[in-house]
Image 1 (tube, helix red, strand yellow):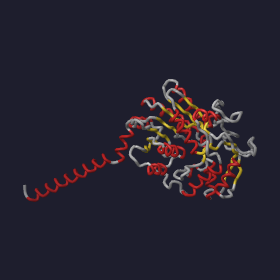
Image 2 (cartoon, one colour):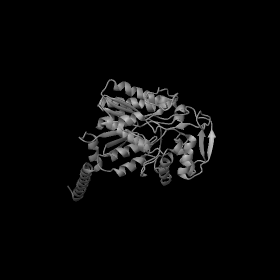
Image 3 (spheres, helix red, strand yellow):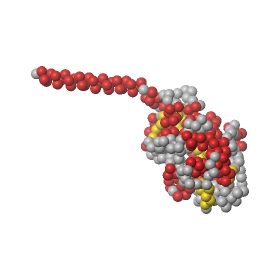
Image 4 (cartoon, helix red, strand yellow):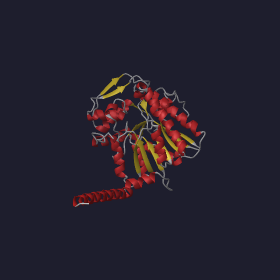
Length: 393
């Protein structure tokens, strides 16, 4: 072998040694990294630690649930396809709880049976909080098949995965829309369920599946039918940030804030001829902090082989006009209001009787002042004029 050949061979040998060394170092660091160390924690059950799968955990309500669960020392896995959720909310939560084994985020679509089964196969869940759903009444009347697929079909896949992998506790996020427009107020848990829009119908179908399955299993089931959600995290870490294209479909609180910020020219009130005191719809507005407290209490009280069904509301109704006046005071802006015809699928008056959840779970709404709840949410809106700044994954 001549000198040049020896030199080339030596150089190649050194390169191989360098690459091998870098690879070994990378693997060593990877095995010691928090992400890898944390992932093994998610894949096994640990005594004294409850691992909760939160579907839709990047969304408005779901992210607040994750925050509370983490605060209460639960281990949490978020699964979200970010069609309605915000990766920015996930990043906030990850920043607050960076320790290995506390929180992981999985980008996946719950309509994908293979992906759902893989998630359940690779993680050791103790319970599921199922929030993930499209949730706009008006949109449901325009796109009913989307709602039956997203809510009813996806819930079926979750139930199948829970059955296959032996997960015995389900906290299901349902809605007062399953009741439709009852003849008598307030609504109790025994009020007949006669939904009048695809959103409510899809949720009731999901409830029926859950209840039928629970009869043949030892599953602990809690179904929470809640009313109109407002507010945000009192410490200003999370808030409501709907995608721009969904503003027309969103909650009235979001529309009020958009009008106050000048994003839209004014507030559109749909329907002024309902049989209510001022002609506008009456709703029971529940603060998101209270709502999540109800979920955590439901999880703590879940009993194998038992089903709990609860209304989650304040027990009193406020008209849309009253809500708008409260929003004006909270924002300090004299919001312009346009009155339009009714929206398809809406109902005149809905408010809860929350006595059952008070008696059985010791839960009562604490944040019942509209103006105060809206003021908290408004502070977040003012501090986050572009929402979470990043709605893309």
